[in-house]
Amino acid sequence: MRFYLLRHAQSANNARSKDDQVLFSGRQPDPEITSLGADQARAAGEYLKREVNENPMVEEHDKITHMYCSPMKRALQTAQHVQEALGVACDVVRDLHEQGGLFEGKRPAIVKNSRSEQPNAVKGITSEGLKTEFPFVRLLPAESSKGNGDSSEEGGLGESPGS
Figure 1 (cartoon, rainbow, N blue to C red):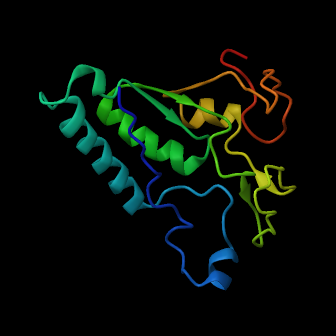
Figure 2: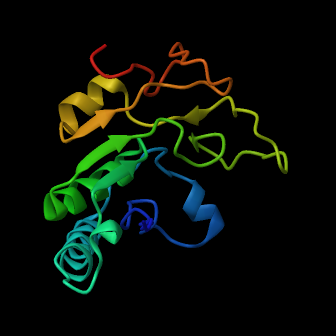
């Protein structure tokens, strides 16, 4: 079995200036991919289809049979293009995101090696938004940091499939 990791395609934030002052002013906490990003995602999907799933030299147990994705729009939009090319199932993993989530406004002060949540962190698209905008994915059951399946968190995915 092989794991193939793919970072999201170019987002609106990625396309912004690399000047730190410009980069963080007007930054979106959960940006969409750009038109270049959509082209990148389609190309990645076609490449994986051709070079992995349709390649007779790749053993069956090394082919891509499933995808997992972050609840962030840029990751979901990238996954959508890849999933269209591969035709495999895609599950959203609620806690698959930057440590502490994404941030609105100014760059926050992060405590080194801290796993604590930041007060202005964004955890991705809501369950309802996911069902409406990205119907190709399934929601995995929510798990809290204690692993008890608590889905009471505000602002991001928290419901299990069928809820």
